[in-house]
Image (cartoon, rainbow, N blue to C red):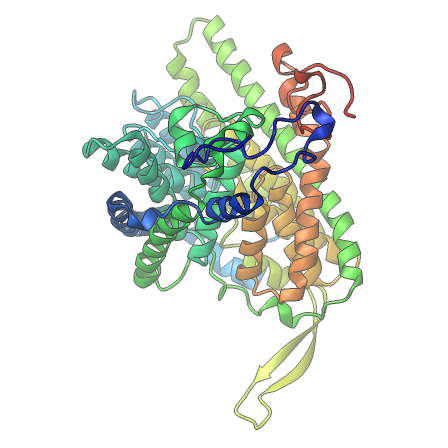
Amino acid sequence: MSSPKGDLSAPLYHEPEDEMSYGQDLLVDPEKDDALQLLLAFGPAFAREKRFWKSFVYSFLLGGVMGGMALLFFNGFNLLFDFWTGYSDYEDKLEAGTLEPYTGDWWWLGVTTLGGFVIGLVRLHPSMPEKVDGLFREVRDLHVDPAESPLIFLVSCLSLGIGASVGPEAAMGNMGGALGTLLGEMRDQSDRRKAISAFAGMAGAMGALFPSPVLSALLIHELSVTSRPGDPRFNAAVTTPLASFVEGAENPTFAQHDYMEQTCLAGAAACAGFAVFYGLAEYTYLDPAAPAVALYQFSDYHEWHLLAAIPLGIFAGLIGIVILVLLGIFRKVAKRIKERFASRGFRPAVATVFLPTLAGLILGLISVTWPLSMGDGAAQIPYVIKHGYSGEWIRFNNTDQPSPYIPEYHNVTPKISLGNLIGTLFGKVLSMAVCLGFGMVGGNIFPCIYAGTCAGLIVTRAFPDVPLSLAVPCMMSAVPASFAPIPFSLVGLVALVLVIDGKMAAPIFIATFVSFMTNCGFGVVQGVLERPYTDLKGVMTQPRNNNTHSFVGGEVGGGRGT
């Protein structure tokens, strides 16, 4: 069999007669196959296309706009939060490490409850969707309804402003995608160009959020691969609602990837967003300069850290299971409350307003009990690390002496008690589940990073031989990674924020994928999601065929893997 001239979709291999003959067929033209493999690896010559340069310019401009929008968003909720917490000297107490349990003011309940009520009123607007799509689905579809985005942006800003345990990434990604979609619709572009605009908007939004724009492009790529598992190209987002993870690999055009085209466009948008935000604010949201010292100054790398990362990853995975269980519980509670209100003759609007108001009341109670659990955690992380660690660390004294880097050994006495760290961890995940389940808007990655920080400090306090530079970075990355399939983005984020020694990235990586294995790798989450639906049982929990990587028997519900 030979391929027609110029037809790259024609197979160069004989079709296998059975499953066991994969990879055993002879090539008809080995030299042509070598050339083809290189062509497919390099991808199309996209820079020779005029439409690419138009998309590149749009991406750069969109990224710059999102940098300005990010500054508006962050300043908005930070000013609101600082305004009302300033009456309690929250920031001063945070910096001094004196926010112990039950030190919050009871009038906070009035602020958070009123804030929840206002959020409920905003949610009554017809343009506000009942259920907000997360960043994962938005990257999958590369389309966001521009009419819904402003209210989502406002509700998320209000949620963060009253100290809700949600992250800013959901609103930022939504706004970036909406601006990109709007631009594509205004210019009456093709579906692929509209998808590219939405993609660039999201990348620009994340570029203003992370300490380096490379993490934005990396995150969007990881989400593209996991949300469109069979085909991560732009075309897959505009041709089918969800690419098949089995059939997609058999598509002959699948090999003609647009990976580097996506990288160039995402990089342009992310760098523009980063440049505008950093140029105006002179800091990034998760600022590497915020921690008191770089964590590589705390201890040296040892080989046993690689083994120690395994139980840390398992611990993080178990925390992730608790988080997902709580999220599921409060979403079911919210559904029951809506049904109860409807059965008693109340209009749906009553439940729409009641749920965020109730969330605000519960949030206030948790905040008064554990003040360190407020917000998304970005402001608390540096001071919790500084005041929550107990042990010895090394800091280099940078002076004008001939040998400026002289090691100084310091014994650290923690100001934050172990009980406070445990309570803050519990309060953080509980308030996050309540806020997200009862109608507030935001992401769950940033709160989980902070929860991982508290968990890492708890480990160092319970096991003093485990260094801070091992436990905290591992748990910061591993807790959100227990259910978020973005391991490289999380490892890179933690390494850049905490200024990690390169060797210490190895145990962080191990803890990250072990955490995901503990939770999703063994099908804990998938089993819970499949259980209520008969036609979904076994979709992701049934063992697959080792040769074809498909389900045994060709359909869901077959036997064990071979």
